[in-house]
Image 1 (cartoon, one colour):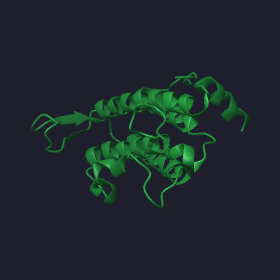
Image 2: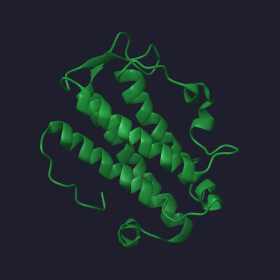
Image 3: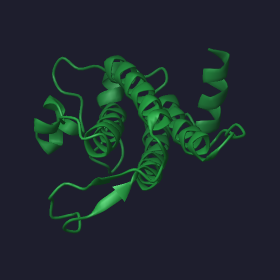
Image 4: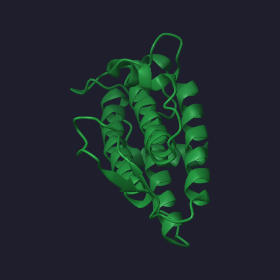
Length: 177
């Protein structure tokens, strides 16, 4: 993380604070990009920065809203795997950054509204999940934070490959903006 997380007030606040720090790193990596750059795949990865933003946003909604809260998955879950990881026709980086902000606010509302982090939920019946498994809100938040952290590093590499701008340069640029 290229920035220092603020002090936490309790466990929930700590988990949300670190998740937000990694979300911010992903957003910073996309700062100031053109749509063409946001769709570009300049590294060995099949993901563009725009696709990465879309993926982490959809991933967060899946884990918190769909898995933890049991809400319907919505139309994004019906998209082919490739379309969940790239900007499709009519989508823009700016739109997905806005959606990511909305999803982040939903996550905070969900987490702060739970009676405790021990609340658990069943994992879906998928081959990559152990049968009949359940996970707590704490586990889900930790899993989501590690997922976004991995992709924040991934985003830094894509961005530096695109135009040479590093995470620290983007921290300074976004603070000045």
